View 1 (cartoon, rainbow, N blue to C red):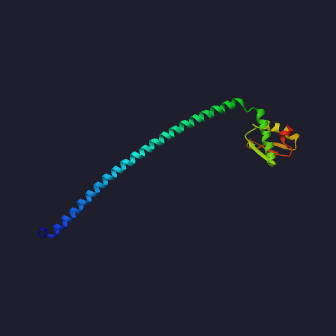
View 2: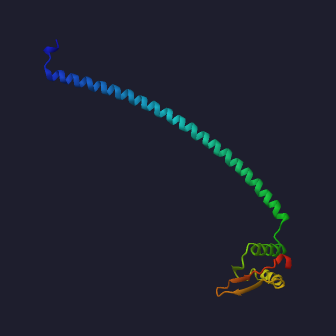
View 3: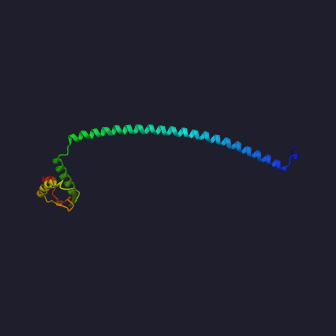
Length: 158
């Protein structure tokens, strides 16, 4: 019976059958890919939701810790107000620390004359020891302090 069908029609039927098999496979594969993509999207959405929950928990925890830290700092601010005397004492301790670690010269530049009084007080302490303090005004209106640190600790001279 197949011998009665001319060859071009046989080839055309074979090509049509191959095209049908190809289309069937393509449609099955496409459906599988869409299902796999939907599963992947659902899994990704779950992960995103979980990460958002974790981030919210972390930000809530950090915000609470930050608020607690701010309250603690504010409480300490009321106790340890940086008065002028504290500033002078801390400056003397800092200069003594510089002496201890072997620094001999210290230069500081600051705006205007805001720290001139502090340097005058430090100069009084330095005059009792072997340290020199000099302050000069720059052409732009700022000030520059030059300190040559000696061997006698400034906190002992106080």
